[in-house]
Image 1 (cartoon, rainbow over the protein chains, first blue to last red):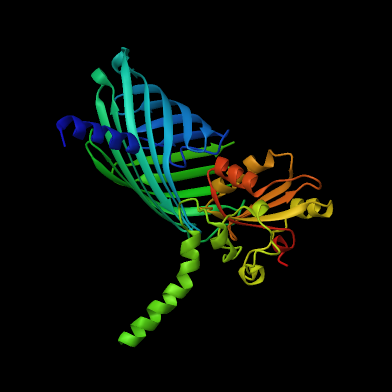
Image 2: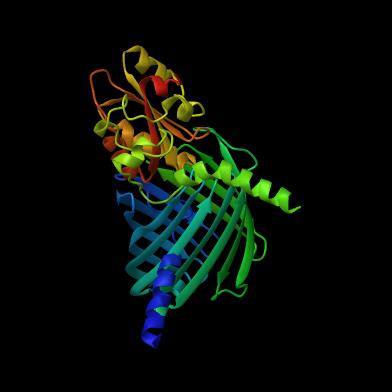
Length: 216
Length: 162
């Protein structure tokens, strides 16, 4: 493999792993989804519209707390593959984005072009959940970030349609620009109808986690 | 020990083959000859293109374990008004987002008088309005719009558990 091929492969892999949403970044055809995520690194909002069952286009705004940079971007996401079974579902998503990053630190403001690529893969039954996602973000003069996250989840009971679904999850994330590069966050996921809420606390880099997704 | 292993292997193969068939992640198509040997619960197929009475396949045994329609108030009301029941086995139904997706997509159709996704049974339950038609192909395409794939469709008495 040539260096260019390797770079392209890495970029595609990063795209697949990039900062996809915590829950199904592509919805049903014609569906809208609102996603909020807040963790030790950033608070972000994403609104996306699914033009088909395997493609969504969204608007993302994200504030990176550590260096006080705001990212605003258009974010397309592709469902590359969905595996179906009687008791399971697996998904592979690729995502990316292009927009503007603005430095808001030290009382001055500067902006630069920002791009990111990512990937997310998940596999779940009604009681077991595993996922992996990654993102590579390039903000030119405002710094580049890479992120990897893995999750393991277990539901103590199988909730039926419309009931409250509860999950116990453990998230491990790796962020190369943080002093504590690898961190562990136990969290609870509550899921009912079109709404999903997650709350947790990062034990390694003490900070709360709060995520919300609503599908309509 | 070897006999025990062989017996366990045979038992596992016997019990796992039907579900493995249904769990294939690729859309399945069959020849008319192969279709005649199939059971209705095995996979999605085109009901409109063959004669149910003369095809020679075994409806009763295939449906003995098939889920019947789940009755919600909306489903019961629609049935009382003369609607036609349809039960669809759906692959990959694991969470409420799956249910929301199918409820939204099927609920928008005028032909659908009632819809309910049963996560426990992994079924999509529909009542088609009296006088309206919703073909198997329609159901398959709508399920795909929602992001899912169907494994089998049962209608009328089969959907009611008969």
